[in-house]
Length: 121
Image 1 (cartoon, helix red, strand yellow):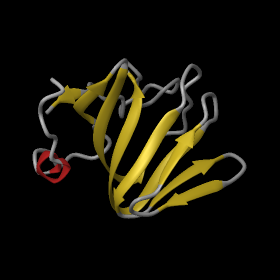
Image 2 (spheres, rainbow, N blue to C red):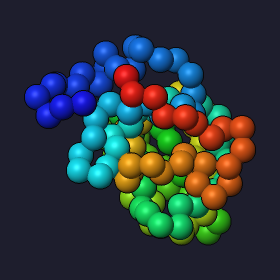
Image 3 (cartoon, rainbow, N blue to C red):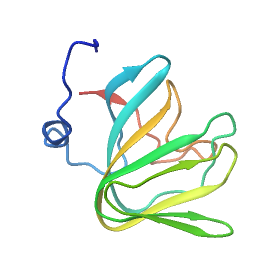
Image 4 (spheres, rainbow, N blue to C red):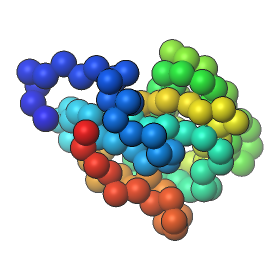
């Protein structure tokens, strides 16, 4: 992934259909830019060492936290602070962009069946 390539997000989304399986589309310093399709409810988890950026491209994403929910629509983003337990949910498919440090595990401290092996596309 070099800096001279234009990344067409719509074309990248056409390359995969699975939910909760982030795909690496670019790198920025020590950060990964990932695309993900979201449908249903994820697992409750946190990332103790890093914040996590969610940018919704289509659909409506609810990020549940223990004390409140944040609802994002297309063109809106939210930075989940490190250490805050959260559980993303979408009743209709959401396409989102994630920005996180290289090597961050999508299920954070929870692990489990939804832990993804991030593939570059």
